[in-house]
Length: 328
Image 1 (cartoon, rainbow, N blue to C red):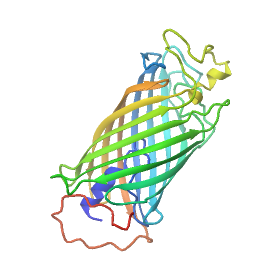
Image 2: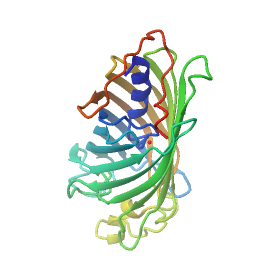
Image 3: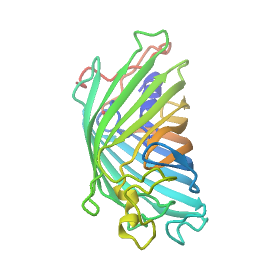
Image 4: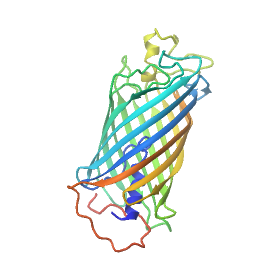
């Protein structure tokens, strides 16, 4: 793998929390292991009309592990498991001792994605299916909960294209559409659509500048109301009310997160990255004031990988696309 190609691929494989199913797949026997550290700070809760109300602050630190591996030249498997350390500071805790102002940590959900590359040029098209399963019986009724403790089924497709022959410096764009179906809770399934995008530009062989975003639209579920003037579908907001205890699992949550950052290719196999994100719009959930992600990514080869080709063009600065045989 050339340095330029490694730079291009590493830019795509990082930060799975924002782009969780890539358009490009690794070749058979090759893979990428990514370790990232994410800091999230939430100051406001979001009402059904998008209004923001301070109901206490949530700070989370997430250690994220993601493994991607090429089963064939077209089929790839992704496996990830985050560890969440979070705390809530405010006057309206959901459940004690979880929301007592101290940090509490737990593993969240194991996620599996299978991606199959249908087409390589000029546009990458890679459908995928995914499954998320809670790794343990963690507490879900808390501001600082690790997650919602629900199984989740995902189906969708990723799209991507590189522009090494169009611009003076290499660039790429990719996006995805996913339809998410969570486990039914109290007769409610909060069906959601999610659209992610990632735009990258290479000013040098080792640096990638990125613009990223994620839009989720909730299609079903309960409304939390205006927060300041009405209580929406949750009129009894006490821990003993079973409907309120499941509100994070049954609310119709929508949001738009945007951000940007950069990747730096250290060697052909190792790269680092930094991304910053924030919520610019949302309903029935939490507004991310600032999300910071830093991590490292390592590409590797196993004995099942194809022999490497010797490339005699060290002056090449544009990223290489996958071979034409690739028709996430």
